[in-house]
Length: 478
Image 1 (cartoon, rainbow, N blue to C red):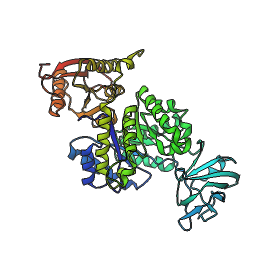
Image 2: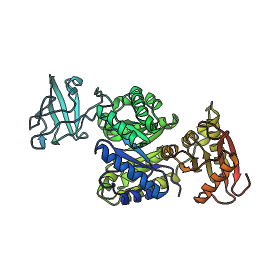
Image 3: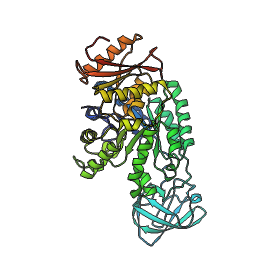
Image 4: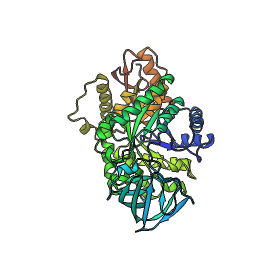
């Protein structure tokens, strides 16, 4: 069956063999995430080559997303690997401490003391440990333990409510962008952006690094800082999409605030013609179990019903015992949720104006296919823009985007309800349209007598040139 919602999966030790990765692709994997928080440049390069090889074997394009580490603020290392913090006891975070003990620990972000004041609340290890800042003296942050527990090497630090000044792009991120472009990444996910400037800088660096390879990657902003929320629209405007990164975001704004924020972010992204990925702990129990919990099933289904373009797996596919089964389960949940999703196309079009010819053709194709009961929409596209606009509105009519450009095909692998396919388009319009219909029929998506809506640009081969809509029955002469 045609699945509209896309699946992004992180590859790691559990999924870095050709056999497992090929099975994951055949199970429904659309985009591979390379997590630059772990591994070397050579590790990422080898995995990228494996993705391309396995995708060729599977007979389709699979996109690669390079996910930058960003300014992950962490404690340093301990003499004994960890310590146990007791509620009510003092503990010091010391930027000049080399090796921690039961009384204090160092910091990898040396400017943290400048960001804090008495009364601030620090959340360590994803919020499992809570410290109240009592005073700041030079390089030392003196705290009282509110919620204790075991604290081990390199655990993360957040300030409740956000507000830490660490830049979104570190020196490591800048080097990783160059690596990502050299291995042909299609998307770059930027961690902890605070505003549009962070995303614009990342795009500029990626475009410069990608120029020798002819690559201009799509830029994804990971929304995981509290201060990113009021700047969400400007971040959207400067990005190609966002990721609802629920882990660090929940630590900063509180778990209870995240579900409503998720719905708001998905709605804003779709209204802005941008992509949106929902991530973090979606199928967490499947790291160790062969089936998801019912709560996880509901979580994935609700993200689908909210209108997300993609759902993402992290540790489940990178380090879990069941990476293939996890993708199979996630795909099944997406399909079932999509069956019940209501189309509000007519309402979506009320009070909307379209100033571009190609966008007007895209919307006309959606409206026509929806009301005529067409089996498919087939868009001949160079850049993928027509398919993106169509994908922002939900109908139960599948969209097939045919392009001669591998880069466009991979970029469209994240567009909701869009199946990207390769087509060496002819300069003759009718020949190209006939070839497009033949591709869709050969894939089993349409049969003789079915109605299909086609969009194409004349003259052909120009990005942004879609200007023609055609309605045909399969088998008729074009």
